[in-house]
Structures are given as structure tokens and as C-alpha cells.
Length: 309
Image 1 (spheres, rainbow, N blue to C red):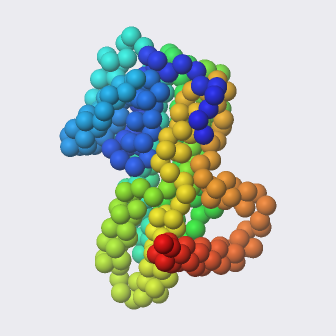
Image 2 (image 1 turned 90 degrees about the vertical axis):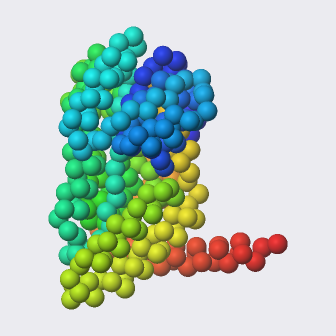
């Protein structure tokens, strides 16, 4: 998705949250390659040191300690960027920080639900409230990272789907609110991409399973574990790469007329099409069949790769 209508990136400053690994890191590196001065939000000093070791590029990659669930951390990052961007202003904020909680809703600890919403939704709003004065001054861009799951929520993704659907609604309202002020708002909807987050999803799910009441867990255990296994296999087999996501972020920040939504991956595009065309009850019946077919397909592809010369 390398756009040919990008505006010059040189001297433009962008903040991206959740940039320590996975999609956020890929986007931060890509933007620096395009010439942006990228303030890469990370939560720990070790992540900051790892980003600082990235080879030089035409732009700059500057780690910034930023925990979107910590008001004091957001305030400090805001003060730092106000000082650092006094020469260029702040062109964009990419709200990428997020977690993914997977669990049968009946087993879902409310603390895990609050953490999901606090990170993906409340954290995004807190960051925007702090940095909107800078964005208004530059008539810049907001890029909110959502998910194709918002179009087609699957089983055991209630917490994550709630957060991503909320982020979609937030983005629509904010886009209309800021349009008269010259600030553009876009949403990136990535499909399945294999990144380190999958290990964290598994770890969180196993912790939830371990703490659930036995009589409730037995109702869901087998189907939930099958869902986790199939989902991870599909992620490993996905043809969508972090670089595809990074190119979509670059397009949203650099296009003269950015799209409202950028769907990344065939599954993200397909889920949006299915939502528009397939009745809900039919989708309820088709979705399990699709997961089963996808699981069989990944098995076949793996067998072919293993026996290929």
C-alpha cells in the first residue's frame, strides 16, 4: 500500500503509542524511513533502549516513555513533546497501544475487561485529550488503530470486540467533531497479522482458564482451546505482514485526502463485506463452518510445506 500521493514527511513529527514491538514498531520504523520525526511511545526503559538501537534512517526514531493507562506518564510525555516539537509542531498521533483479551464471557474476570477497555479505549481518549491542542495548531492527523474484528466479532472475543467497536464509534464521532477544525481522523482496520501479541493472548487466556470456576470452565474448555489453537494457526499462516500495516499508517498520515478507513488484509476486507451482505443469523451459522474450514486449510498447507522438496 505504498501511496504515490504522500505529502513530504521531512520535518513532520508524529507520536505513535504502543511502539515497542509488533505492528507499532513496524509503523514507527517505516515512518522514520519516510523522513518523519517519530516519537515512539514505549512503557519500559528496556524497550526504549531496543528502539534506540534501530539503524539510522532519513527521519528520526525517538523513544518516549508513555503508558496510556497512566495519567502522569501521559502528562510527562505531553510536556516532552511540546518542548521537542516547538520548531515543527505535531503533525500526527497514531493510537496503536492495545491489548487483546480472549475468554468465554462467563469466565471473563471483570478486572481483565476493565484492563481491555482502559488500554484500548480510555487510553486512546486520554492521549488525544493531551495532544489535541498540538494537532489543532498544525491541522494534523489522528490515526486510530482498530481491528477487522469490529466488523465480525467471533466467539470468545467479547472484551476485545467491545473495545474495538467502541474505538470505531469514537473515531466516527471525533472525525465529525474535528472536521471544522481541520484535523483529519482515520481508522486502520488490520486483519490477522502474526506478531508477538499472540503469545500474550495465549498467556492471558491460560491465566483466565486457570482461575475460572471448574463447573463453568467445563462448559467451554474444549471449544475455547480449539478456538485458540485455530486462531493461532491462522495467524501464523496469514499473508498479511506488519509492513502492510505500516504502509497503511503512512498512507493515512501522508495522503492529501486520507481515507476514513484503511482495511489491511483480505480477511479485514472480507469481514466488512460479509457484515454488509450476510444476514446476522446466517453469519452465526456460517462462522463456525468458516473457522473449521480455515483450520483444515492450514493443516493441508503445513503438510504440503513439510513434504515439499
